[in-house]
Image 1 (cartoon, rainbow, N blue to C red):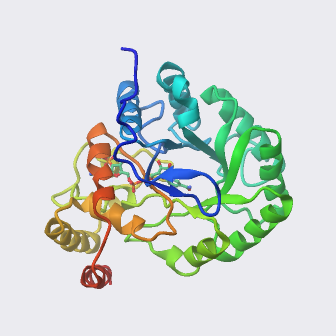
Image 2: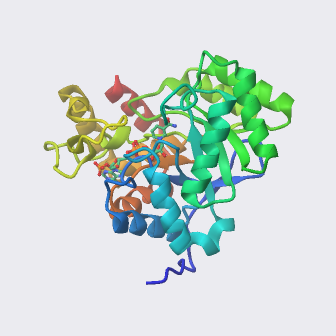
Image 3: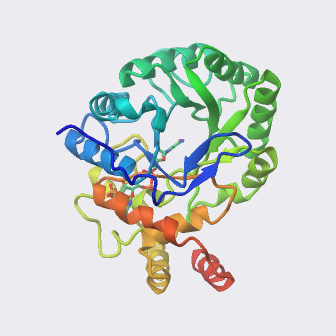
Length: 331
Ligand code: NDP
């Protein structure tokens, strides 16, 4: 069936300005790290992407190594893009990244100009795109001068292969340096992509302040701690869950589901119920309550999770009592 996007797709979505830039991102964005690879069901991936766009999710986040196997999420996305989304290219913000190991030898990993430029060329081919909207350096590389890595990002923008650039998982000191170099080069850092959830709050120790002060956007990843911050593991490990599927490439497994975590999840779930939300919705709402967060980057394995999670935008206000209780539960 030919896909025609829902006419009311912008009716309910909220958009936030990405730092000091002119670019707005939807409050919820969709990542393709898992569930869009060569091992996954193509029609499920397609249904998820169609539904997401129909609901106003205009930003899809990829990386060279997403799959498994590495590269296959970009291929899946490329195939769906050609079939469904080509007429909507100018309504989409598509991002990709390089920084983790992608091909053998010294030029397929980390942060050299050689790696970043070649990798983006490969990504564009896999996705059948002329350019991406955002290109990220995926993780810091202490062995490559930051000037070289940031210089590669600047070059890529000047070549027209990306419109904006970002960094991911950089700690405050290295992020500050990267932001300064990019400013000097005339290609401002648009956005930072850090891990952030109720179970992993490291960005509250300096990074959020830095991004807020520098006018750089922030798009947290793994906001549900890969599914732990939902009600799905309350009564064991479901067969169709990420923890049970042993996907590799950083996906969590059963070891992440500890009794200590589940005890906290139970208490958080009770609070979510009081707020009239699912725990997934409350965990996402907790991330977007901070105005320095531009967008929250979710992952989903089923279309129904898009519908559920998206409702976080209907209530992301927390009373002080609720915030204190959450802090107390998290310990
Ligand atoms: P989440 O923490 O949102 O976890 C997603 C998983 O949670 C889903 O696959 C699903 O698991 C479960 N889930 C999602 N919604 C619901 C719901 N409503 N109810 C119950 N369970 C739900 O994010 P990810 O870890 O997937 O990361 C999101 C994105 O962030 C990635 O796709 C990627 O774009 C980006 N990312 C970036 C990284 C970086 O280094 N820059 C690293 C990692 C991710 P299940 O499969 O069990 O159903």
